[in-house]
Image (cartoon, rainbow, N blue to C red; front, top):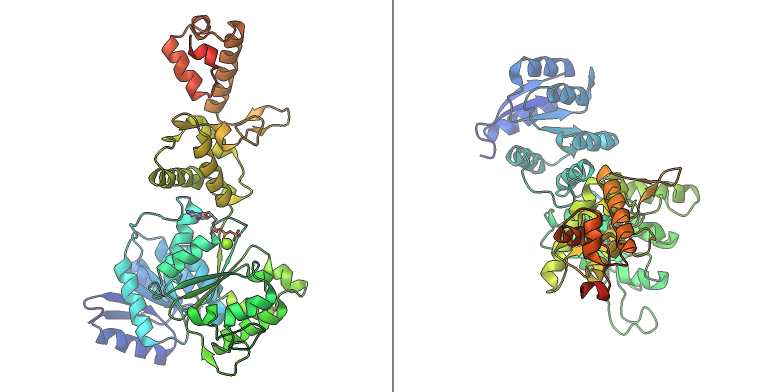
Length: 451
Ligand SMILES: Nc1ncnc2c1ncn2[C@@H]1O[C@H](COP(=O)(O)OP(=O)(O)OP(=O)(O)O)[C@@H](O)[C@H]1O
Ligand SMILES: [Mg+2]
């Protein structure tokens, strides 16, 4: 029995639906308390019924919304996870609830097996303890939770976000955590393939369908069988191919170019775009009906500047990746480099970060990556943000570093570059001087090295 000795709460006003769910859950060994209104559920939960393994909750109820039941329970200690049952119209609300920690949702009508699986997953998953893989910022931790919850559903997902934020990374995450993870992950960049080719690449073609089509060709849609079809830059799809894609989604079938055979589409569809599709709809470049079909669940990946906690975490991860790939490479990021990374606003997002780290680890001469290695394109080398009066704005540590650097350079200039007398001037030992020069990225000419 799937739910042996489990205690569940059910909030459902429809007597027929409620009765059949209770019966089915009891067959699986659960004991179920059934409330027929928001009020009844809230009273019971406030009175100690919250020690349930899970609550199954309708969204539309005669005296209010299931959301109120959830919010009430969420105020208590150790609230139980919620599985929401929603109509198609309430999907957005359900997704919002999941973002705020609700658990899972199912759209009505649902399959009983699916219903039971979700509940046991919900109870089994308990408190998530796994290490984050997408990021450590609250935004990415929340996004990862959302992705793992929707990964097992078959809904079409539209992933949006600026260039380089990690839309494809999210698509792969969805695939890897889905039931289709053993199947292929097929990524198609709709912007990179010319339109005439794209059609036969997507849907395949029969022998002789195109000039030079010497044999039958299986398209991506066919090869994605049992796996995931990821259509990147979906906003660039021509109107003609948009209508073919719409047909694929609506009928879950397609035909090869030049062929009559109707082929079933047996993959999960994920789409991504960095365009504002609502704008594209307004200007007639994107079909509204297709938009609603691909956007059943919307996932927005925030830009890197909106999640500063991820910058250094990602940078360290990229450094480690490089270290495992290559023999000679810097040990890590200097403090100054970390400061510079934090100050930069990352218009190219994670891709830019990755590129800068890769380049820096090739450029770095010493054991530590310095700001100049990361930002050779910026005069000041540390990506400082300037205030209105042109003063660098940043942490106190960075300001101290800057002042120290200037002061040491002045001392060195006055001794013609000789380090020992400069250290004397500054009242520090020669060793401290060397350490500071290395940390602050002050170059030493050959002449001084020989000193
Ligand atoms: N959370 C992450 N963890 C590790 N690497 C990441 C993460 N997000 C993005 N990256 C890396 O950043 C680069 C860009 O990511 P990706 O290709 O997924 O972005 P995108 O949003 O699809 O970009 P575009 O809009 O240009 O298609 C890749 O090298 C990817 O590996
Ligand atoms: Mg991409």
